Image (spheres, one colour):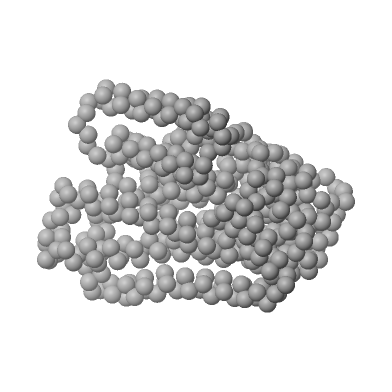
Length: 435
């Protein structure tokens, strides 16, 4: 659920960034207000009807219905920005995107409140995970407001946010420290044998019927924490908990955070490549640069703005849903394999995964970001019989990562090398338009 929530807010940010300011509706202000209030009332009523007709009959929504509800939220949010002029209005008072994301949150949280067993604890957890994103945006907007720009500004801000965010996150989360005892001692000794140092061990209270999770927050030991949900500690024995800890240790020892950061940093390269390719293809439909400039200054340019915005949003969704998700799954499997290597036994993690799947009812359910639990169990059993697949998987993942980065860096380098030629001429026309 957390991954879907984070992806939803990221897409909302992209909608704000890429879509045109607003359409000039020939409606008076009273009619606009009535239409807006009617839209809000109908959305609220639709959620109530959906809750009564579907949820109370089956106890849960199917995946297609969940996705349709989310698409509806994005359509309404887009309509607010364009047709009701929210983007133009907000831009007149505030140059950033945080207010727009807070407006999207009113749709998203309303869906969660009415259709899911949302708790205040889960809201705190979601707020904590969204914090680094908002903090990075806030820093960038503050530098822009102050007119303070310098080389490497984004990377320095990113490093600052990644370093300090874990400490701030645990202040937002409803956590408590794991008490000293046999279990804490076992975990400490196991992590010590791997050379892993942490600041503290934390326990998250139950915030939902399917909240059975664990993880490590932070990149450096002074701001690095291992956390468990209380439900996970209740259903697993000590051996199974060590299996889960070994999996999380696999993420650290495998430097998965660094690799995922590289994949994320390839996203702007992908956008730039797509933009350059688009303007090259688009320019082929015009006889000369004068006709292209006339089009960009004419009324039909609105359709180009919308097409660019929608295209970039779809490309962004493709990147996170398929490219980024592929590397998430690959590194998740690698963490399973490293846990097998650390413990020299697949059973602790297999037993933990099986228990989680049984109690949540998700044992055979597919996952776009982690592989399904049953898939992970089967692969662990396979790797324990044929251990050569462990190194094979490691090498394959890194080769694909290098290939992906090269596919984004090389075309951009080639296009930029042509900047004095056709690309440079096109950029001089397009850059004032997109800015």
